[in-house]
Image (tube, rainbow, N blue to C red; front, side, top):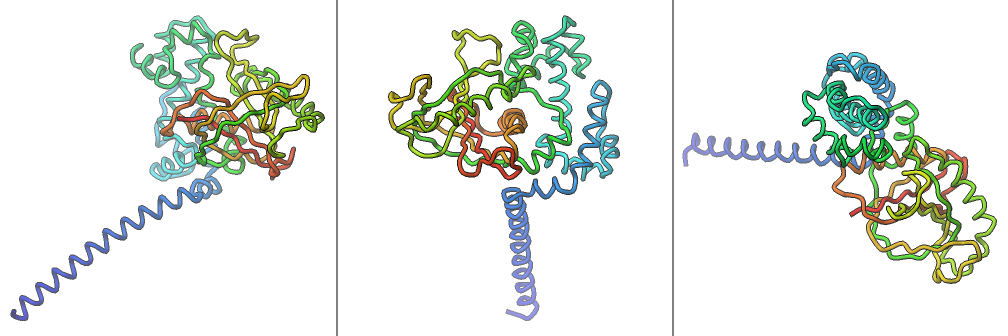
Length: 341
């Protein structure tokens, strides 16, 4: 082989090697980006951009009935168009377009459930060009048509509403909750404790902070009476009432302040027992005072669940109170478990 031929062959080999190296670099960059997301990239984004995003959200909320452009919102945030869209999605969990659409649909749901305005007028005010397009989007977000929502009332769709992003909420997302859950399979367990009915934290008429603390206070005085408990860990069990159950409010649920026991038939007088079926749960960690747990629950159901590959499973919602729980402390931690399938 001549020198020229060997030179060409060497050049091809070098170029091939460089192409492979470049592909490997792209792969490594992609893997590194995914790793950053897994170990807390969102947290880093929060640290520098919460105020920028809050300014953007304030503009959006003040002009939800008007035409909104990415450029005008990015200017309000003090960021370039591209930079703003990347940061917004990282912080809020939705693209800008998704957030605006969900907020408009949430306000439309309130108008559908609480006023007698024509559905077409509500659809047009929410930015939809036709009743049909509005109905499709409404059903996709809330699980029922506007007509069905009007018949059942606004409370029937509040589980899936998109809450307004506030500075308090942004701070809670940054400091007070794990953004991605741990998926766990729980074995069947029996619990014993004190139960009572309450109105869920996602409802406008929520009374959970009035009812549930009293249950825990009474439970703390009597938990020593439970003889067959498995451990010192306490559980908060929320059970959705059946359609046949008589309710004082559409969002009424049953809460049991309790512990895991070996024998549910041996429970003190005045206490109640329940069985938690085996199944899969998404486990999030709520950090900070228990009074803020409603914000965590809103995030789970309004932001994480719709974007996940999971759907709700018909089973109790669980809270785990172990040695990390310290009432009123900003360092307190509670595991919040959502039944999924």
